[in-house]
Length: 241
Image (cartoon, rainbow, N blue to C red; front, side, top):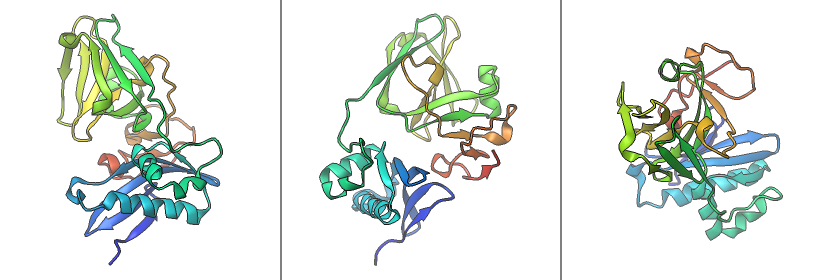
């Protein structure tokens, strides 16, 4: 029997339910268009071809909805390379082929520590949690979340200090100047390299998280999550703009 597949618009993702375990592709929709952002297949479903089933079902759903497609997700991009019959879904000027991966560098306040990120962030937005407010001494943190293997320290590895208030976030700073550099989120397998530190990087936010804790209201039309989207381990509940 085929696994149940549906478009969960409340959480902005296509879902494939395999015996109660959910594999999904997150997206952003606009009138007549859709961007596929990230694919997640839980390790419990590995080795069963679930990723291919999810990719095919997702692209068939895009076709059925009549939307023009843009692809940010590496998994979907690779799937389309192997299945070019879906290339007609692409918006004009969009490309499913691999593009040269861009790299951006960030440094601490004094320059003793430098890190480099490669590719595209998995998520980019603004965090309003109390911990980020206290850590940064600012009402909002502009975050860019990258896969761990897309981030590397290029200078001053021995100068990096680490503090973790919880097991969710390991905050990295320069021991010389105290300048903040990044936060490792091991449970999400993602690293937040602060967007305002990345030279040449254009921050393109798609959401606000932990908006329940806000000290500054932002009316920009982006989704406002009470805590986190479900794919990041949150409730997925949204609050008014």
